[in-house]
Image (cartoon, rainbow, N blue to C red; front, top):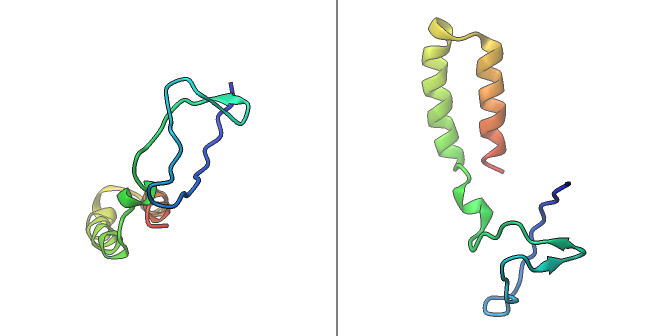
Length: 79
């Protein structure tokens, strides 16, 4: 079964009712989040702190490819 994620923004107080197993655009609702998904994203400053910490340990413990992959994934969390 395929899954598609999309976000619809409504005016405050005009959100439609949502219930378990409701049909949405021909599919079945599988999950709902009652907040902005971006609330959990890292701030650019937080990414800088993580980058600095990883830079300090990278040269001694992991290779540069692993460091690059970690940072690429963390950057996705700031968008």
